[in-house]
Image (cartoon, rainbow, N blue to C red; front, side, top):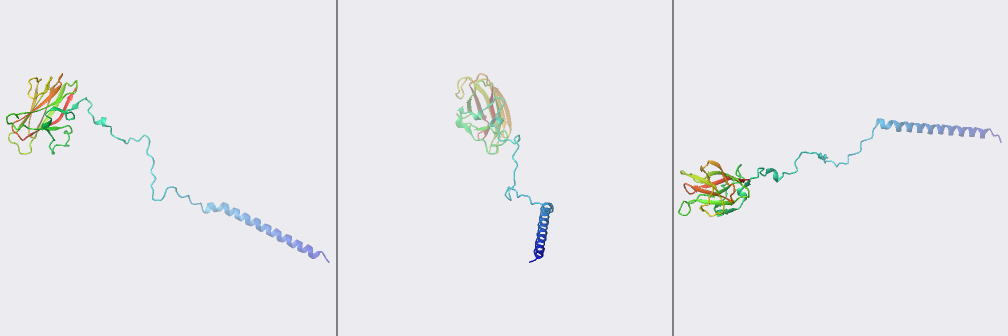
Length: 224
C-alpha cells in the first residue's frame, strides 16, 4: 500500500491546526484590544452614594462656633451689689402690699416693682408703712415712686417718705433716722435716695391726699 495518501492527510491536518491556532491567537488579540479600549469608550458609572435618597447630609458644626449654648443667670444680675426690696420679705406692712397694676406689670423698668394702696384717710388709717430689714452694710436706699389711680383722679397727690430705723420697727415709733421724701401725681414719677448707714431697717411711709390711689414703688434697692 502506498504511503503518499497518508503523508498528504498528515500535511492537511497540520495545516488545519496551524489555521486554528492562528484563529485562536487572533481572537485573543482582538479580545485583549477590546478589553483595553472598552473603558475608554464606555467609562464605568460612579458607585451610588451611601446617603439615602431624599436625605441631606449636614456638616458638623465647627468646634470654635460662636453660637451661644445658654445664657448665664449671672449675666442679668446687678453688678453693683444692690439688693432689690421686692426680693425681701417685708417686716411690717406686708398685708398692705398689692400687685402692680396690670397696665404697668411687665413693662420695662417694673421688673422689681411692688405697689401699696393708699390709706382710707379715716381715723387710724392716715398713712401706710412698710418696713424691710436691710442687708448688713447697706448705706443707701434708692426708690422711684409712680402715682397710679384707676378712676380719673381729682387733685390726687401721693407722698413717699423713706427713712432708716435704728432698732425698732413699730409704725410711728420715734426712733427714726433722717427722712427723704418725694411726691408724685398720678401718671408721674419721682425718685429719691435715702441714707441708711448703720440702720437695721428701712421704712417706707405712703400718704395720699385722697383715698383710692396706688403708690407704685419701682426699682427700690439697697446699696452697700
